[in-house]
Length: 433
Image (cartoon, rainbow, N blue to C red; front, side, top):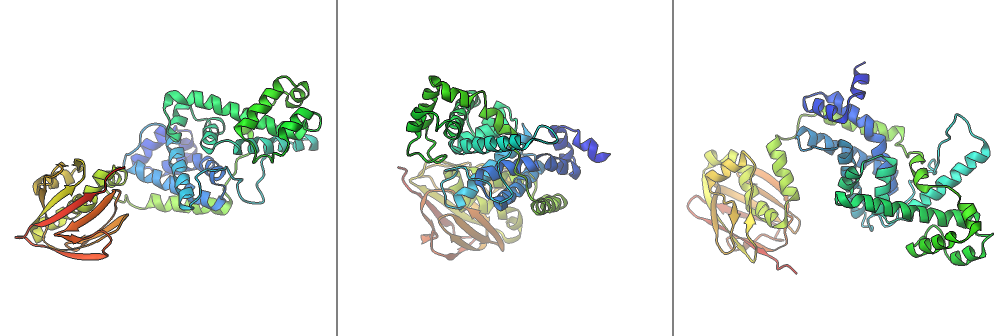
C-alpha cells in the first residue's frame, strides 16, 4: 500500500519527502525514470554497458544534489540534463567526435520495432511495422545528433518545450522554431528512405537523384531537399509516400530497456547510496561545486591559495599557529575569491581578500609547519599541517612559484611555513589569444 501511495505522488512531492528523510521516495523516482533515462542514453551512445553506467551515475548524482538541496524546477528535465551531459563526457573520454552519428544500440536482441496495437497482428502487418520502424530510426540517425536529442526529448519522452530547452541548453524562445525545423528534417529524411525502398524502381527521376548514393549514410541536407522538391510534382512518389508521418512513428518505437542484470546492479548502487550518510554538509558541497564550475581565474586563486585556507584553517589555526603568505598575480585580471559560510568567516579572520588586484600583493595566514605541493597542468595535491587536499586546476597558468621555487610540473615540492618569515606565492597567467 505504501508503495502504491508513493507511486501516485508527483515528482515535486517525492522530492520533498526525500529531503525530509524518506528514502523510499527517491526509490520511487528511480523506478519512475530509470527505463526512460537508459533508453535515452543508449540511443545516443549505442553501448548498452556504458549506458547502464551512465544511468547509474545520473541517479547517484541526483541523489547527492537533492540531499544538498541544489535543485529546483522540473525533475525530469533535470535528470535528462544530467544524463545527456554524462553521455557527452563519455564520448569525449572515448576520444571520438561527440555524437558524430547516432549508433544502433548494441546487442543482437535489439531491432527497431513498433509494437502492435492489439494482442496479435497479422504477419504482413508485423513486417510492415518493422520496415517503418527501421526506416524512421535510420532517418533519425541521419540528423545532426543535437537535433535528434531535441526530437527524442519532445516526441518520445514528452518533455515540454521549456524542459527541452533546459536539457539541450538553448534559449526557451528558440526551441519551438528549432523543433519545427528538426521535425521537417526528419520527415524529409524518412521520405528519402521510404521512396528509395518503395518507389525507386517505378520513378526514373527518383532513381537518378539517388544514383550513387549509399543510404542511410548519404542522407545529406541537399539530398533531402532535392527529393522533397521532386515529390511535390511526382504522383508516383506521392502515392508511395502517402500519409505516413515519421514524427508520429518515432514515439512508437519500442524502448531499449536495461537487462535484468544491469537493472539489478543499478538498483544495488542506488540502495547503497540511500543507506550511506550524506557525504558532506551543504556548505561544503556548495563550495566544492563552486570550485568545479567556476571560471579559470577564480579557480586559479582557489587552487593555489584559497582552498588551502578553506581546508585547514579550522583544524590548524589554534593548534599549530599561523604563518603569513603573500600572493601576487602577474598578467592576470582581477581575481575574485568567494567563500561560502563558515569558510567566509574564517577567511576574514585570516585576512583573505575578496579580490586580488593586479600588481597588488595580498597577505593572509596559513597554519605554520611544512607544506608539500605537487602541481601539474590539470591538478594539484597539497598537504599542510598533516591534512591532504586534492584539487583540479581549471586555469590557464604559465607558472606557479613559492618563494621563487617552481611548483608547476616539478613533482612534489616541500616548503616551510614559518611564523616569522612570510612566504611569497606568484601566479603567472598565460596571455589570452
